[in-house]
Length: 373
Ligand code: CUA
Image (cartoon, rainbow, N blue to C red; front, side, top):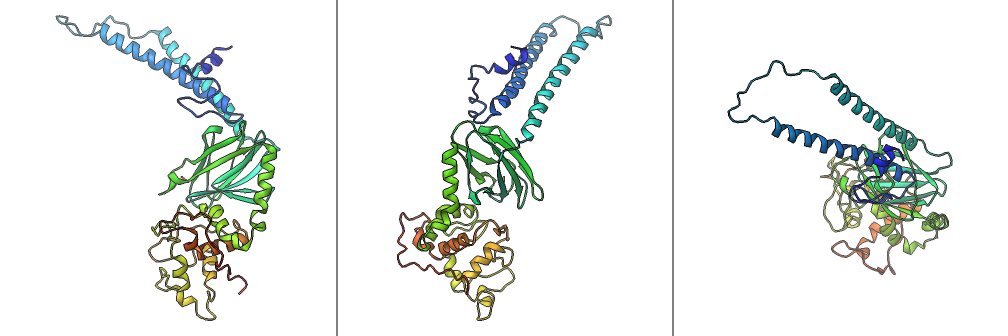
C-alpha cells in the first residue's frame, strides 16, 4: 500500500465502507473513491494542524522573554536557512500537486457518464424537483425512482433561478442552471431511499426543496415505472381528485397551502368558491367575473384553473407576485383534469386544517372538468 493509500484509509476509527461522522454511508460506485480523496486531504490537514500547533507552542515557551534578560536583536543570528526553506516549499508543493491530481482525475470521470446510462430529465423550479423518464413517458415529482446497479444520467435544467442537485449518499452534486443543461451521473449500489437536496440558495423555501431517490432492483424498477406510466390512464374519473391530491399536489405544495394560509401563491382552500363566484381579484384591478360573461374568456370557470396552470403569468391574483412557472408540457391533459377536479372538490378531500381525509366520500362529487365546452 502506498503512503497515499494508507493516509486515505486512516479515518480515525471509522469504517472504510464510508459513513460516519463526516458523511452518510455511501451508496454509489463513486462513493468509496470520493471518500478516499476526502480523507486523504483531511488527514494531511490533521497532521499539519498538529505539527504547526506543536511548533508554535514549543517555540513560544522556549524563546519567551525571560526576566532580567535584556531584549534586543542579536546581529549575528541567522537570517536564512536554505535547506529548511526548500523543505517547507517543496513538500507542500508536492502535496497540493497530489491533491489536485486526485481531485481533477475523479472530477473528470464523474463528469463523463457511461454511454448506456439510463436517462432522466430533471427540472428544478422554485421550490420543487420534477423528474421525467423519457423511456417510459413518466413524470415524477418529489420522488426519483432509479434502477439498482445501472448508470443513471440526469440531464438537468432550471425554469427560474440557479439551483443545485445534491445526493449526499451518492457523493454527487451539480448546479442546475436556467437557460442551459448540466448533467450528472451515478450508479446506485444499494437499494433503498436516499435524500436529494437543493444545495444552492434559491429563495424563501430553498430549505423545503427536497426529494427522495428511490433505488429499486431492476425488475421492481421496471414494474414500478410501468405502473406509473399507466397510472392516470387506468384511473376512474371518480378517483381523479384523490389521485391529484396524493400524486400531483406535492408539486404545488411549497406555494399553495390547503389550510387557507397565504404562501407564495393563494391557498387552494376556498379557491373553487372564489373561482365559481368570480370574486378573485387581479393585480390590474379586474376581477374574474369580468371574464366570465357569456362569450368571455372563462365562460366555464374550470377553464380559469386550467389556464392558471398552463399560463400562470396571464392573470395574477392581487397581493401576489406571479412567481409561478408554467406547467405546460409537464402535465398530461388527464392530469390537468385531475387537478381541476381536486380543486373543485377540495372541501371533500381535506378537513378544515388542510389535512387529507382518509377515504373521502366522493360519491356525489362534481366530476365535470369543463373541458370541451
Ligand atoms: Cu432550489 Cu435551493
